[in-house]
Image (cartoon, rainbow over all chains, first blue to last red; front, side, top):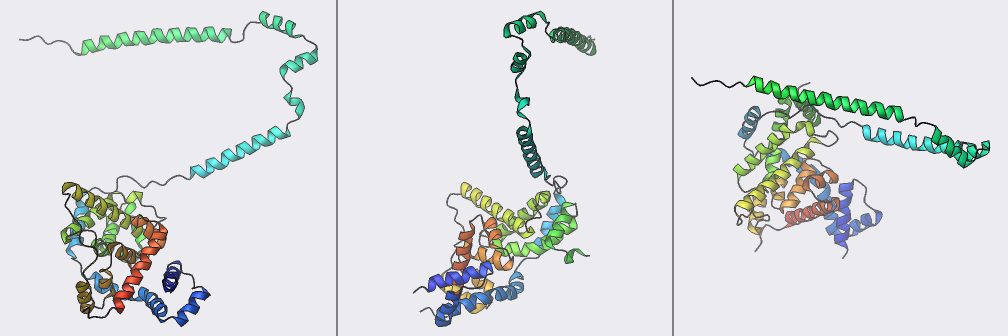
Amino acid sequence: MFCSIYKWYISRALDSGKSLPGSVRRHIRRCASCREFAQFTESLENRFVEDMPGFLDDYNKALNEKIISALDKHPGPKSAPKRRPALVPVLAAASALLVISICIVWLVLPSSNKITPLNQLSQLGISKISFENMLVKIDSPYEEELTELKQTLKSTADFLLSRVDIKIGEREEKSPKVPHT
Amino acid sequence: MTAIQLSDEELASKATAGSQTSFEELVYRYSPRLFHFLRHKVNTDQDIEDLIQETFLKAFRNIDRYDPDWKFSTWLYTIAVRLSISDYRSKKAKDPSFVPIPTSPEPEEIVIQKEESQNIWILARTLKKEQYEALWLRYAEDMSIKEIAKVMKKTQIYTRVLLHRARLNLAKRFSQPACVF
């Protein structure tokens, strides 16, 4: 009644390479059909291997020469062998280390380092209004850089414009009109 | 060490480095095997030969893509199966009435084949297409379930079921009496 299940177990054991469960072995001892199937499937491997050479003889060997001559006509491998660099796991490990080290530094840092600049000012006894007055008086530290940047951009634009003019002139010189005779 | 003594994978890596002789040895080893594997998939011997030639040409052109983590046979059979599928699709697109060869033979044919030969492969060829292919990859190519599933584009459990059914049917055909009347 359960023979089909036992036969499935027999087949599965063959593919997985594991030994048969005890219940299946006990059933095989009692059931002639399953015993025959188990013996047959066990013998299959040898039978297939033994009968292979005779079976392979039924083949047109001229095909090999045909394939090899076709290989000569066709280009070989497209490119040199490419091995995928094993960078992905290395990068993942590096980023994980970085995150962990940042977390450690953050945890280890003393709480005094977390004081904001405004708190420090209040500690020094400087009021907010007087601090704002001081800021107005001080020139922006980026003022000079901004002016320099503007000048550089202007000179670059002038240079590029002059280059464009020269190229147009050269093209005109390279293709002179030939008068018809 | 001569090419004959080298394993398939060693020959493939030599072919990747540019040795056409190594690839030719692989052609000699695998063309009869591919012939018997593809017999079920195409109608005529000419179609099989074309398909084998195309398989080897594709493998040769893309040998640099071969991953040595897999067996060479798995890679080659995967190419062959894919090409046979696209060949079938293109034929079906050209001629909607195109029908592949019958997969299961008539009972009379089975009896004749059984009487004519005791070769188990000839009997296996009378099984359904997928069952024969699974048996071929398992016993002729010594592939694992995982590799067979990869080549046949099936799940591992389906591959196990296919093999089990193939063994059951083969066992039935062996014990079938010669007279069917």
